[in-house]
Image 1: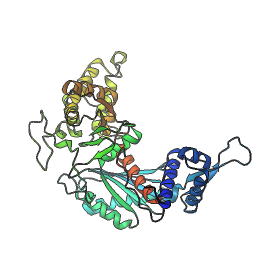
Image 2: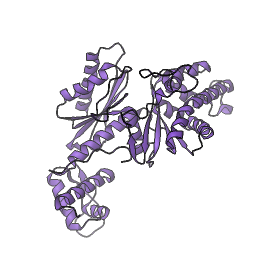
Image 3: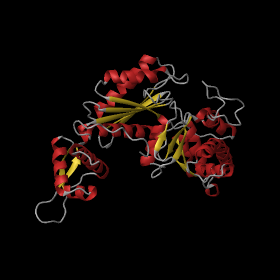
Image 4: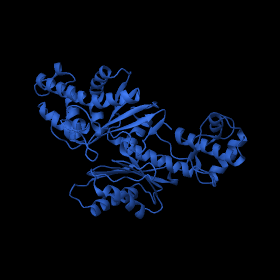
Length: 420
């Protein structure tokens, strides 16, 4: 059954807007070539989108042609501003950008464990308002939030969890109250990191992969055949609760102590480094676990060329043993997901995954190949801890564009999952 004229116009408009978002400013001729639409159809949609305030003339093509240069059309980037939040146990980071995501304003504030719920929420909301003002955003259209814990697949709300501070749940309601015109979206932090790694990072071009998050805690995001798999209760990927050998205990329904988290979480990585006699000055530029892993990678990179003032052979040997022990631990989680899901690719995400780089990834890949019969590539994250904020911003942009790019009366499409 052929599409109605209004549906066809909506489809064409969305196609043109997506191309302008992906490719940058285009002429009507370039739109015609890329969309395959007729010249009159392209002329109509350009006029329609210009009248609606979604696109505008941003320059001229400069092409060698008879007559005047063709006009370049681009998306009106400040038609909407977006905010992204990366909510951690003891901090919150915020980024605000325009509709094209150009040069976002960013800031981060620590929120100590002793901070009360009310003051913690106020600190976070005030930070969003301040960064929005710095970005020149008069109002925010969509706010994307990445948070640890389970997201209810039906309501989209952050579920109660005994391991997370109360201010995490209160923050969403506070943002909706202070920003009544904004759409607020909450997603699990690891899922957002997977989206960012697929769009801009280590999983670029992959429609099936698993992101193994190695940061303060551990987690996994599962993307199969282009779809993010959340599970029946939204808990797919809670790998910190995975029972593994070497912990001396078993996790419980309310505490992941004794699970994979006890082997590969940040505190466990720091303790493992101490056991191997490894230390390094803390710069504060990244978490201690990531600094130790990065130091170890540097120490064992080229010990033969090291001078006494740099890295001794003994230091290099300690670093190599530490990385081997860490790879043993990480491989337990990686091999488990490989055996169950056959993703073909595991990305070692988070600050620790990025700090380990190819050195840690190669060690994990070798161990996984011995434990699982399925061919699997192991890649280090290229975005690290910043993947959550990037993923939240991408999600906010997708949702805003789906609404703004829908012609009057046309339903907005849901924001795509990673790979969707």
